[in-house]
Length: 434
Image (tube, rainbow, N blue to C red; front, side):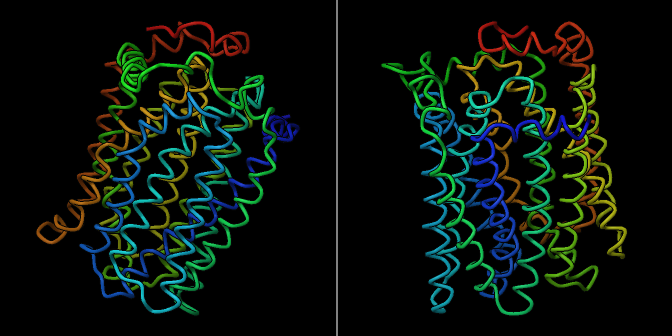
């Protein structure tokens, strides 16, 4: 029965089309994560240059994610998703051509990363908002669990592993070419989404509450006000914002150099570690989707996230790939479990006409410090030992998780607001408890 619960969304054609395209696209994104790192190194870059390219992507994401959320509530979500995939294809194809011609420069990678970040800013709110329109409420947890399963397997495991092999056997340019092929296939599949099925009746995914004559600032203020007045939402985002500041920069920018300098590894070892994290996240996501939400869904989500950050504190002391792999496995398991619960909470407790904006605020608030984290990681590593950076990151996040649980009174809130099927079916018409 648990396995059948996780597979229920596949009974719907639109979900099958969407998840197929998404799977291919995120596999390409996983390849890009490794190909980009070693393309920077191939061009003579180090931590500072990698920080620049990574920061460009996060700036594009953070700078446009609020606009992306409003667009998801105003415009056809199907068309937004297709347009983003088309833009991804254009960017990666251009980088591939420049790399094959030996004309690629670091500033090309930075600009390409920025455009990809902008695309993510429009994709994620549209994807979050389209799911409740193509699936019944009872299938949302399973759909988020399936996305949470295929994403780490393909983006954090298979994609990086394949890219690492291509880089080692051929060159970073060949790995980038593989990324372009993935986005080409995903773009083609997305065009099979049914125009009317992938949105509200006759609207192609446009919420009637958000269409027609409303200003950008008014839409933004409405979503911001709802977030501030909803303690569980506000404090989860505060914790996420701080965790991004302390974790993203070290993991994204410094981990490749830990592999190289501390373990004597190469691109294959780096890809392996990302794969271990991805497999753990995938297994946890599938397990979470196979059972009902826990009664203490808020407490479980935040505490699991916080405790999962503890192994990061030891990364700077590890001299074994197996120990580092264990730390990444624990981090991945807890990330996968918490992310599935979080995505389902947004879709079941947030009114549907606000879902695009709340999803974008989720990304904005939780990722607002990503550019800072990326930009600081390289320079800080020049003056502070890497082991100390990881130690602080791994200790601050669990502490803040427990603060969030008590500050938002999550243990009381989750009992007063049980996520029963009947409640989920009326989430788009009744205001959330504040």
